[in-house]
Image 1 (cartoon, rainbow, N blue to C red):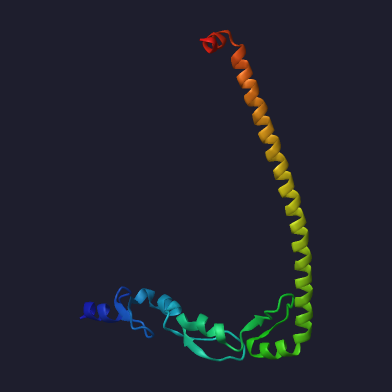
Image 2: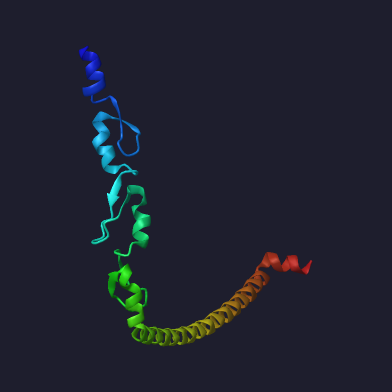
Length: 160
């Protein structure tokens, strides 16, 4: 009788279903499992949201949650706000965002021009180095032929 009660009620190795996913877990591990169970309902951590979803769906929820803090997508604008206010921010800051964008386009245009000049200089240098390398190879080849001709054994071989 005590063994049966132990096996069904107090044994830490008995199988107990998770109240969220119904997966059987050892009683000893149930608290740990329920604290991380993907099907457990959790509340969105964003202040003012209050929505509860399954733990494994919280990322998807936060990706569209109006109370999630986001950064303005306009380059150079570092303002942060909740997603629900982003549209209003973009509309109100359109002129400033446009000015920042044009400034960046202008800066990038100057950078491109500088890089093109640097690239042209490097291409010129590469051409000079290739020419010098070719000339050096020709001189070495002439020297090699010349030294072969001056070797006694080679000279007689050439005369035959």
